[in-house]
Length: 225
Image (cartoon, rainbow, N blue to C red; front, top):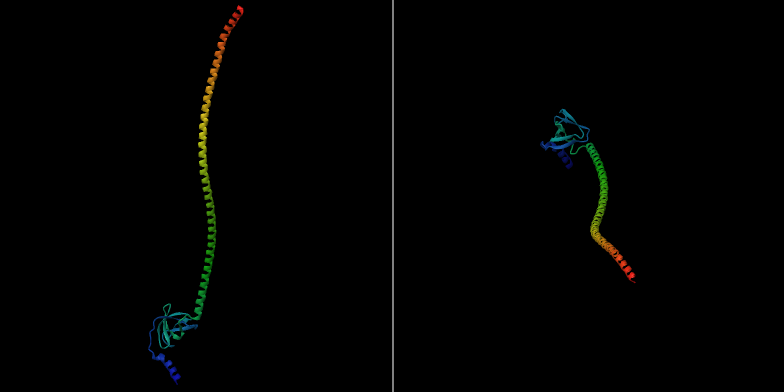
């Protein structure tokens, strides 16, 4: 008996409740192939539009009679049976959306893979560039060391050259002194030879003058004997 009363209350409840204007919400036509949108709440009202499964509708009003006033995305308003409306898109629409989502994800994954490959290539190129830069740095460091050694040798050579120049100047001064001394000695020798020659000449002349006198004296002496 209680079950019968409870069933009767469930059947009569929609008729006892007043008409309620619900807040605008979004609903979807269920998985039925098509439903009718009518001008009013009942089969006696003309069909305004046929709605395919998955059509998105905005619910404007829920009526206890089992009808809901809805509006399509292109602005057409009418009444449809509330039992054909779901809170979620139809399974077919959900499947299509998921398939589209999967396709989009696959495109994203492909894009990420390409980007990763590009980054790997760039990383490889960067590694090659780093290796080249390291080799260049090592070569430049070696050249710098060579230049430093060369500069050090150049300084040493410059000092050695300076010392050699100073020594050459000293030797040149010594040579000049020796030349002057030799010239002086040569002049003295010439003067000495000139004096010796003059003395010899004078001695010869003196002998030439004295010898005849001596001979005459000798003859005179021999005559006296």
